[in-house]
Length: 123
Image (cartoon, rainbow, N blue to C red; front, side, top):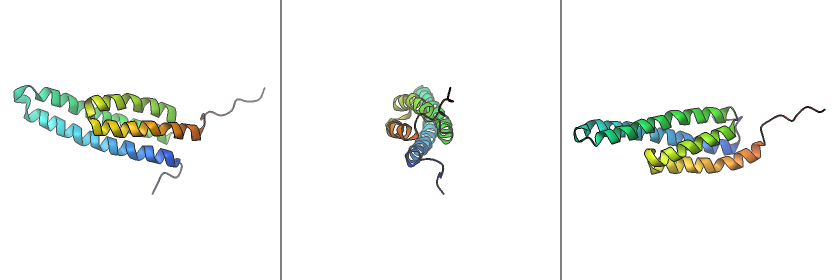
């Protein structure tokens, strides 16, 4: 069962975002567990921070997916850029690369979707 009301380009972006969110969730849980286990050495605090940021990435990707479902592609692209940068810094290379690929796919989607605004009424 696919997204029948969503263009094929959006389906690709949605797939990439869903994979990224799952990886961010898994990495976030692993970072937090690793941080809790190594908290004795104070290195665990850094791991816990990375884990919390990964969980934030996971939750924000969910809101990006909602924007795509609402056909608000430009806003989704802007939010993806923000979490792409944070993903590269704190979320890991895999999450960052997947978000980068999704970000690059938006241009074709936005071009095909058009401006998304109804034409102005005639004078």
